[in-house]
Image 1 (cartoon, protein in one colour):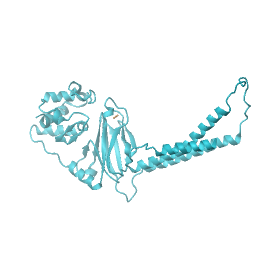
Image 2: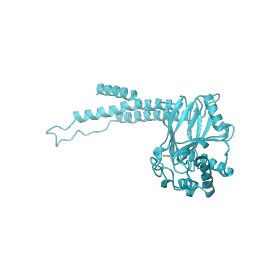
Image 3: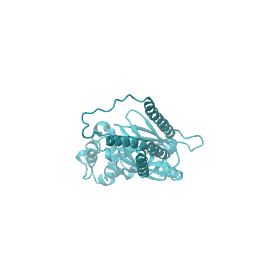
Image 4: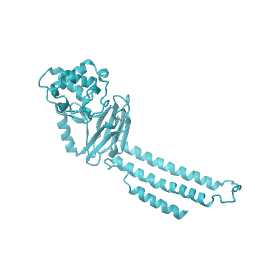
Length: 339
Ligand code: CUA
């Protein structure tokens, strides 16, 4: 039994530890989570194997043989030593794994130590079915910057403060080994320190409606210098509206990139929006009338172009936006994309 157990443990551990279970780790916490996972594997495989070997051996060796149908096994009176052992050993094992997990959790949620680079604050806004990221004035040095993809400097601890505009979503960056629910009415927090350059997916991990599967974005981890240049480029003032009712156009642009969340899903050159979930508005609205654009906002299902499933764009804007907000959006879109 011992020989079979040791051999099975070694074989199983060799297989399990050689499989790449996780995506490329790109944050300091991802490494700690991976080590924790390996330690849990190493601790649990021998126990699993022991249980299996004992059960299989017992079934084979002590099985009922012909002629034993009416026999009973020997009466068992218990074994104090054994009972103490099988209670204490698992208890100690679980306790130490709990302590180790707690240490890892505490570690990955800790604010940066003194002397390390200052933490970066980023807001995350979840909405059916898009992510928006808000860089506060402390980062931009001016007005807050709202984007639909995330850009982060390498080696700096990021504190995400997250809220939802509608239902429960979950912000998940698999490569950061970081996931946290985004709940309406609450601000939830998540911390990660990217430590590898590259672009990684951001996924919504909570079923949030018909467009849940489309609720994706990406995070680019860049050097500190590239990040500073990116913020400078993106946070600069937008080109002022050239024609039309200036007030409404400006208000419409603010709606488009801000609270209404249009830029999360659509591309529009004027707003520097690069969303790909919904149609590209520079293309889709070209030559269209203001009435058509209004219909797109208040009754999107009636105009959804081929390839864009219905109900991915919420059909509730007639209710959730005021008349003025809709008017501003229509004027803005007609001015910058319709002509
Ligand atoms: Cu948002 Cu699923």
